[in-house]
Image (cartoon, rainbow, N blue to C red; front, side, top):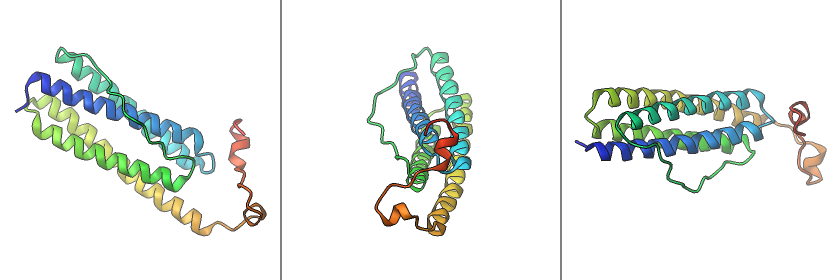
Length: 166
């Protein structure tokens, strides 16, 4: 099984991943102005990820470590609902695999339980993003072309005006 230092390193990897997911989901929350339910659901998922950051940091400190972030290049999804949902699915699948590997490598039952609990929440997020993707793809299929589409102009979002950002 993993040494204390190895466990801290794994938890710091998890922490970095959760911070990255939070940043991506908050970015999506700000740019997904075309679909308010999607925007709000992504915000709720980001809040869950923030809670995971707190739990992981507590575990790291409890082991005598220091919560550290290893900077990585963050790949945002942009303002397209379909792509944002696909990016969320990719992140959640990656998180589930990461937590499964770390649960198997760590012998401390308290840490295993917490990581398994986080993993289970990531499974819930995966299911949410899958449902959101289906709805986003249906919305694209059902969308009627606008005059702006025919003239090659970008479509304005009515929700952008209501949110105070447009």
